[in-house]
View 1 (cartoon, rainbow, N blue to C red):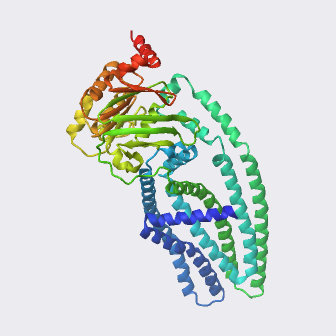
View 2 (view 1 turned 135 degrees about the vertical axis):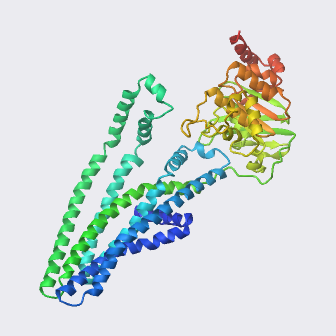
View 3 (view 1 turned 90 degrees about the horizontal axis):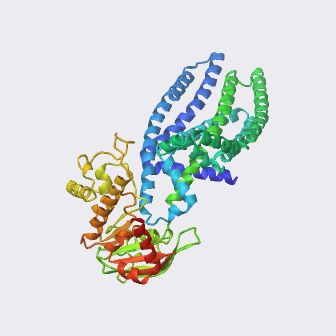
Length: 580
């Protein structure tokens, strides 16, 4: 019963989403659906009375008109309803996509993306946002229509024999529930509960993916991938055949019961006609009612099963909209000016992890300083940048701008004055101009100036050219060119604080030197923190923060660290010797 309750609860919530998306069109669809559903009931009733009147040689014009009206409605209303359902689908799709985007806009931290289950849900939501609304409307409206039609047919039958209607109801309803449950069991076994589902999806897409096409062909991975797919598929399929056999057996049992009750009812109606207690038209009515009920119940099961998957999607959708991140937004507005950025006893552990990445950091940066952050892999360099960007709050301690905790500022106003170039930078499938301006409006001359500063003057000629062959016959860039685009985007934004996380990892030596000169040698007044493995750049920094295992191993000018810290000196010398 709990499962049935949850199903109808989700179905009702889905109908509420329809009305939120567009009240007027939803009202029209809801009004048309019962009319469309009752047209067959009217047709059966009018047809029965028409036959009775004809057999009794009584006037039949009124019932003929009713039957004609029912026939017209049965043909016209589905056409009109389909048109309005299409309009509702468009509105609903736009509404759902906008609500997902606006919810994402409200999330300041990256906390959600660290929850693997929630992240999986987010991928499912994003993938289904274009077509799930279609299923919700088509099957949601169909279920409403079928319930009304079935109810009307039972009412017609009950007018003549309540016990027969109840007996038929007692057979068809359990049959419907059992069939529905078995179909859901098969679905859950095959997809929802299958631990292999995501692997199967990945393997099936691997041989079709554009990004993997070169290496898949070079290393001839086709046979191995197909073999692995078939092995996993067979494992996931193991229980499905058993479920289908059970479904067939139960279907045959209930079908036999339905046939027995239907035949018994037909025999009873024949007896009533022979005794002249009922007209001959009632037999026509009974045959039509039984046909509608059996077919309607079957469609109801099928549509309910098909809707089930989309209702689970709605559940994920609502869960996402109701998600509240632990990080709270501040109320103060950041104006962009500060004198000191301070960390007091800052420690940090990622959500859903027990490993402390940063431990008891005490630091102070002055406005306008250029700080290099170095250390071996896993020392916490990128994590520190994420804390300073406020993608996360410290697990312990606090970060202060002057004497005000960073958490007291509004994230939006704080990030307004930040810019960054990340190691895992985004490659937006947009135009050159949109990639650099991040879709902000601004002078073309500023975009061209940023391109010139990063050495991409070849792209100045067509700023509207799309940087992906996926859309509008665009162009492809190399990894180094994409990194320059990310750096140009960083330059485009006028910021007080600039963060560079391995900003030259994909650049050649000449371009790398140019970038460091552009960002670090120029006196822009910006506070710049740059993470790097290239020790050749640290001499451009005012001070170097040397991290080791999440703690501060040293924080001083480069020359001083060379004199006082053996580990730093060895790291620097190691790279220096490699270039000899």
